[in-house]
Amino acid sequence: QKEVEQDPGPLSVPEGAIVSLNCTYSNSAFQYFMWYRQYSRKGPELLMYTYSSGNKEDGRFTAQVDKSSKYISLFIRDSQPSDSATYLCAMRKDTGRRALTFGSGTRLQVQP
Amino acid sequence: GAVVSQHPSWVICKSGTSVKIECRSLDFQATTMFWYRQFPKQSLMLMATSNEGSKATYEQGVEKDKFLINHASLTLSTLTVTSAHPEDSSFYICSAYEQVTGELFFGEGSRLTVL
Image (cartoon, rainbow over all chains, first blue to last red):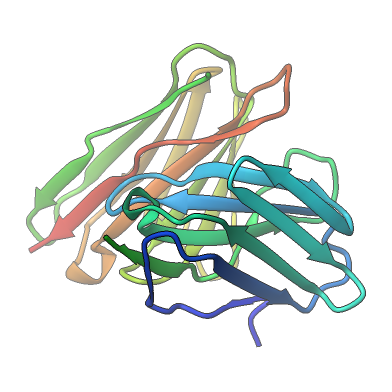
């Protein structure tokens, strides 16, 4: 079983829709949770960064972490065609500068 | 913001040859860099942790003699794929922590195709 599970999609939505992306994980030691956006043939770019359980909002993006369920989510409001990309969840166990464990990524297509 | 640069962004080589990929932190010093490999429609898989001035730490299943990592300065780490074969064709991405802020930055990736 993978440490981090993420539905690969693809997920296709109309412009303006609310998008929900999710990951589950098995290791309760993960404390720091991130969402990255990756355009085709490019490196990942950080969207959201959260610590432990709770919500965090930044513009059209909201990240939720539920440690009791080992479940994290990213919501995108008023989705735009420019949001079309692969979204990767990632997590880390401590504050040390260690490598991240990634989900497989969900490919999102926002139709104009 | 801080930038991590990779070069080349795209390389094609013949089977049996060696290819070197560079990862540079352009405006910050990075004592630790990470090398990932990503196959199509799959996640980033950590290959190794590169530490400035010391040997790299490889993940289980990654051949250290095949994937040579050198981190000779605080701004440069290199990954050399030795005797490359078609199964080594992949997207290689590096990342580095900015020392002061602790933020992690990723390079743009290097696509290797071995014929």
